[in-house]
Image 1 (cartoon, rainbow, N blue to C red):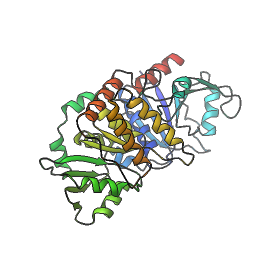
Image 2: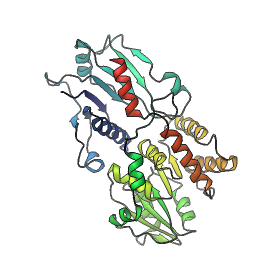
Image 3: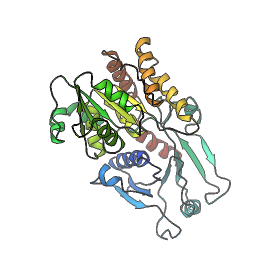
Image 4: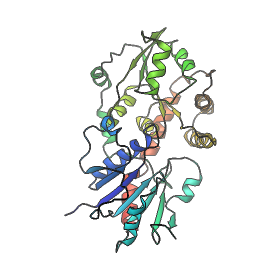
Length: 357
């Protein structure tokens, strides 16, 4: 029997977050019995994110005006993050006897409006997709949203994971008594202030390939050590190994969307650097998440975490002290457990597609 076929469209704007999210979604759909065609304008990051590919996922270049005649849209078509479908593909959708389910998968946000607009239809009165209906689908953190990407075996893999053998396989030798910190960030003016704080106690800092590695190397120099802080630069990691990094650390600095979600599944204290926007919209998104994440936290802890996150995102040279004690860890575990009780994004997309067909 032929598998259901979905088309997933992704444009890589910058920083690889969009292709990272789309690849996780495509691979998860395929693992659940869907044949996925991932159309992307720049697939270069997949060489290190997913070097072995995934069974059931076919990666294709962004279709131009010469779309092959025999390429017919699948039963479900997803445009990720409002990337807009190629006109000839949308036109072909409109010509089909039974139109595909057309979904605009939006960016992740904790803002209240997400619950109001999730799953709302958008009829297309004109253009190449005239006569079709597009649906808005919003990932989110509540039961009234589309949820988060979570593979069915994620929790069991995490329970079976052993950090020390994995770290040693990366050439990292942890020392007794060190706190382990992972760093994945954009260009960050506050990084010297963070690193100065980390010198004050035994710390192993694991910096990811790219902006984090460059900035750490510039601050620490060739020795990659200062005071109680020693750092190691990691190679570009596959998505699965990036999960392993998060599971191996006591504190994770993450950025964008994909690593932000994976840090929450890790259940460890984390600090999020949101993608900055010129109109300041990122500040609203940051505040909305903090309000949800810290709603049930101890007030003193909530104030401390919120102050730190805001200072990090404002790139302040005067960072407050990092929250201490077990309260932050407990809050992260409780938050993760609440998310685990909700339906994940892939399950919801599959159900919505069946319902809408």
